[in-house]
Image (cartoon, rainbow, N blue to C red; front, side, top):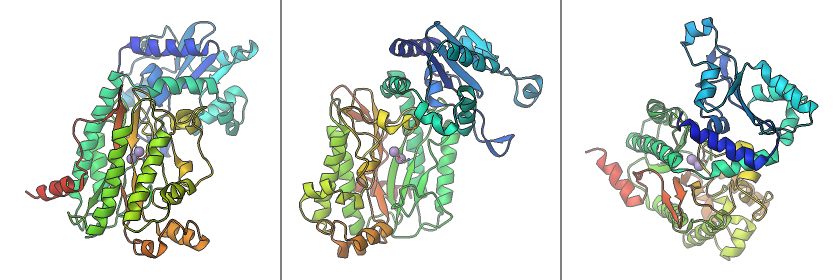
Amino acid sequence: MLFDKQTYIERRHILKERLGSGLVIIPGNNDTPVNYPSNVYKFRQDSTFLYYFGLHREGLVGVIDIDEGREYLIGNDIDIEDIVWFGQVDSVADLAAQTGIAHSAPMTQLEKLVAKAKVSSQPVLFLPPYRHDWMIQLGDLLGLHPSKLREAASVDLIKAVVDQRAVKTAGEIAEIEKACGIGYEMHTTAMKLCREGVTEQYIAGVISGIASSRGCIVSFPPILSMHGEVMHGYPSPRKLEAGRLMLCDAGAETNENYCSDNTRTTPISGKFTSRQRDIYNIVVACHDYALEVAKPGVKWWDVHMNVCRMMTDMLKDVGLMKGDTDEAVAAGAHAMFMPHGLGHMMGLDVHDMEGLGQIYVGFDEEVRPNLDQFGTNCLRCGRRLQEGWVMTDEPGIYFIPALIDDWRKKGLHNAFINYDLLETYKDFGGIRLEDDILITKDGCRFLGDKRIPYHADKLEAFLADRDK
Ligand code: GLY
Ligand code: MN
Ligand code: MN
């Protein structure tokens, strides 16, 4: 466990005070088969379960009966056959004691607790499930078809969890900084390996190995490709080609499952061409702008939109965009180049709490999402920043041949996009730069004690130095 049991007791206490009533069910994760039942993926605990209970074992459920003032850790003790194969583990009663819970029970107890709640009309509160095993199990328990569970999830519980998990304590920040340290090693290794003739798959494999050897796992499968214009371009067996760019978006999770998430874009030949450098420097300026302005009370929506305006102005300077900047951004023309949001919360999930619903995590009564406009509909966060939040800052510029063709054919944004020049960028790829920032009392700061080089001169100097 990352923290002592008092931390978990206190977190559950805050949750109970906020909700006032109900039977709260917080399932931990189960082992998940890859290709047959006993061949499983590396175990990853559910993040909300980790937040309130801190335990890494599979097959557990935390239940909080707020009305009766009782907490339960539910799970089956392993039998002698499991001990033979997997070794001795703590009993469920011992695990309960470790997290400050007085009652433990086998899995059959869960059905009894839910049945009792139903009889007494006690609300059963749960979060939207995202794994199919739990969808089936919760569906059975509650008499609901699994497809109805997301809408039946408790909004009060979601909001309470979001408010608690969003604000990171010093202990959580320290753990995220550990993940950033692993991320630094991953990214600087990828940059050192980035050379003509090396495959994308090889570099992605090496950096995934760094993540596993220093902590738990990668925080998501690395995005590593010469086709940086593909937002989630996974590594292929292709060999890196001279003159192109390699985009690497990757992060680590510590053994306690706090994440990092960084992106760097590296010239495979060691130096940018002048065309690459011009576009790269726009992304750098947008990245650094966010760092300057992010602070408590500022709407992330505004930071994103200001970045879009800055990008549009600078793309006008290179001739790719034209017309009135405010009108271009209001119309969504900039999304040709950056079809995603500036950043998202990060914590125990790399997209923190995304499974609970973007509307509750990144928006509120004041700042509502725009779900209709291409690009703007991909913002994962818009609301006012708070001290203690961890955000990613990840602007990018992409040249997506299919999107260029699509918009041109449809005659979209002709007043703002210079399609003739844009045609000549179809072989460019894409650039993204991403760092993790902590919102502090009156500003923000980078997380991680070492900066992965990103200013063009520093990056080229790093690449030149690697051969010495
Ligand atoms: N995993 C993609 C990103 O949010 O950076
Ligand atoms: Mn990323
Ligand atoms: Mn990210």
